[in-house]
Length: 188
Image (cartoon, rainbow, N blue to C red; front, side, top):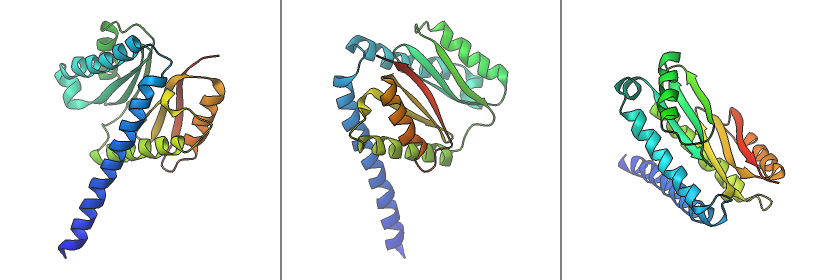
C-alpha cells in the first residue's frame, strides 16, 4: 500500500523539479534577450522584493489578504485578494509610497484570499502556459512574464503587437485559464 503513495509523492516532487528547470532555463535566457537594460531588470527585481517587504510590515495586510506586486519596466501589477476595499486601497497606497516610477495596475480582487490548492493550481497553469509558449517557434518567450492569480493569467513584457497576439492566443487556449489580461508595453 505504501508504493502508490510513494509514486504519487515522487510524481509531485518531479513535477516541481520540471517547473523549476523550465523557469530557470527561461530566466537565464530572459536576462540576455530582454528589451530592458540590465539596470532596469535589476531595479524591477529589487522593486518586487521591496513590495513584498513593505506589504508584510502591515499586520492587517499580512493576516487578512493575499496581495503581491510584480514589476516590469518600472510598472507594477498588483494582484491578489483583499476582503474589503479599505485593505486593497491600503496596499496600493503602500506601493505608491515606494516610488517605483511607473504605473500601478490594480488587479486586486475583493474577496477571501485563495487557498493553497488554488495557488498551487495557479503555479501549474503558469508552467503550462510557459511550456506552450516555449514550443511556439514564432514567439520569443524570454520577453514575456506570465503570472497567474486565481485562474486569471496576466501577461507582462515589452513586446511587439504580433508577439503579444501570439502569447494571448496560446494562453487563451491553455487548460485551466479563466481569463487573460494583457499588461504589455508595445515596442515597434
